[in-house]
Image (cartoon, rainbow, N blue to C red; front, side, top):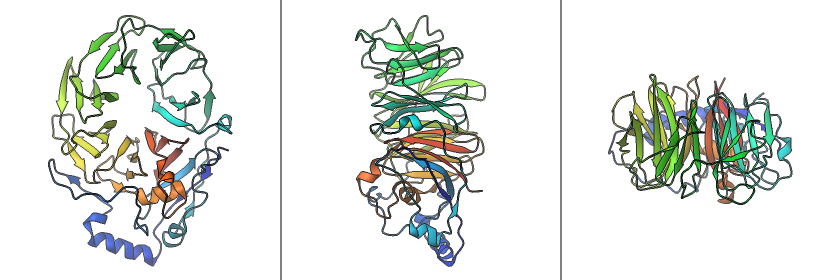
Length: 402
């Protein structure tokens, strides 16, 4: 049964926490205010990410209003004893999400798409069931079972668009549209041969763009002509994002081979991420004058809307899948193997919280490999919080401590 469970906020209130702060002050590797690594700087090798330490050394610097999963994989029925006794845990009054009862007694679903559209609507797609989950405010949710399966959703001012595998006759059409908020879909044809099958679809104003293999196909009129654009990458595109900054709208793509490109006035510009190699690029977020990119080997940042160099945030080469920063400055970078870091100042400093997140998510001091397979895949910013979506119906709202 999908039963969102209230979570906890934390405050350091006792001698154990004081001792912990002293340890942090003496050890740069445990600092709660990690600096940003200079481009090209060498990093010590990381310990295995799926082997938690025997005793957590982190004090939580965020709260979880609710955290939920599927029946049989319920997440963290109560906070672990260590945090409850030595971190002074206090209850949270966060209201759980409403409208998700329709997902009870279902197979184990994973979120394969989740994002906030320009109209403010949050839309997520589940597999293997094919349900669409959407909300206008992150509190009241609706669950739809559309008449055609879609893999990714984008919303223009008048229409919902989706990527679909086949139509009712089994013909690969790839693109679909809906005029009733995702309930029913009709297949559309771009007029182009799409191979391999596109999995990313994004809207920018009235226009759309999709990624197919190493190419981008876009249009300003989804019912009209589509145009190919070649970012000249070798790897399959795994990230496609429109970014509007300082009145300028640019498309960004990242690939499974560590390539990052920006479309500026019709020309693709290459960006180099130091020490990334051929690791996958998966997420992007704008926070005031900082642009963040989540990759399989860490979180990267560029300052200002200029050609300034990219730097890796000194959290180590951790497998981050998603990053999002709210308008209040609270942000989250999260990913596989229970990796999680938070910021309270629009990304100026980041605090690693993987040990806290592991225990919250699994209820275990020493999580098993299986319990760490609930990976976070997507992060969606709200006004004062961040929503996380992941495997096995992982859905959580994180925010700063009061």
